[in-house]
Image 1 (cartoon, one colour):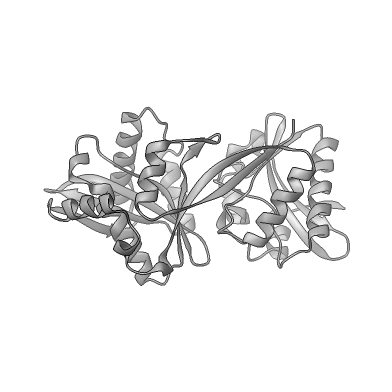
Image 2 (cartoon, helix red, strand yellow):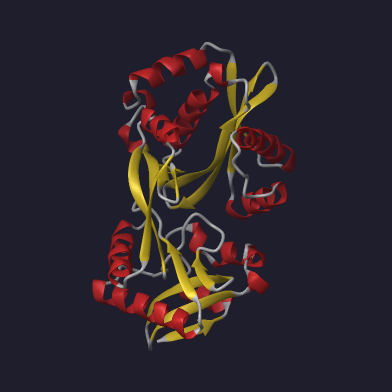
Length: 307
C-alpha cells in the first residue's frame, strides 16, 4: 500500500538513508527543479514501515532522483527479495495510476550493495528498459596511492611533483568556491560539456552537504580544482574536477588525484567515488583510461525507465 506523507513524516520514518541524495534535506533543497515544485514522499507499507521513495515530477515522468547522481528506495534495514519486489511493483502501479512514467537511477553497488542488487533484478523483471553506465571508484584501503597506479601514471605523477605545482584543501567560503567553479567551467567549456550546476547552486549545495574543495596552483595561478561530497558513511564522491586548458603538460590532474586520495585515506574514508565515465551508457574512452590509470575499479550504475 502506498501512502503520501509529508517531508517531515518521511524524515522521521527514514532518519538515516544510505546516501545523502535520498535525504529529505537534499530533496527539499532541489524541489524547485521539479515541475511546479512537485516532489512526492511515498511510504510503502501497511502497519509497519517497509520502505519509501522520493519522486520528483518532470513532464510526464516521475524521477528518482530528480536532481542528483542517483536515488532509489529508502529503507531502515535490509529487506528480503519478496519485499523489494512488492515495493517496486506498488511504486510502478502508483506511477501508472497517476498517468505518469517512472525513471529510476540506482547507485553503484559500492552504496548499500545488497539492496542495489535486489533492486536491479526486481526492476529488470518488471520489464523496464535499462541503461548501463560504468562508474569508477578507488578503494582507499588498498594502501599507498602509488601501489596500484599504472607505470605511465607514476611517470606523470613524478613529472607533476617536479613541475612546481601546489595542492591545497581550501575552506568552502564563497570566494574559494568561486575559484574552483571558474576552473571547472573553463575545463568544461573547452570540451564543449555543460556545467549543470550554477555557481549559486554549487555554493548552496556545498553548505548543505559539507562539501570539500581542493585547488592546484602554479606560480600563484589556479590551474586545477575539485569538489567532493560526503555521500555516505565512509564514502566521498567526486562531483566536479578539471584543469585549465593550457596547463595539461604540468600534469595537475595526476597530482590532484594523489593528494585527494592520500587526504581521505589519512582521514579514514574507505572509498572515493569518482563517478561515471559513460554518458547514456556510451564510454568516454579517454576518461576510462585516466581513471583506470589511477587504480580505479569499475562498477555498473543502472537507470531504468518505463517505455
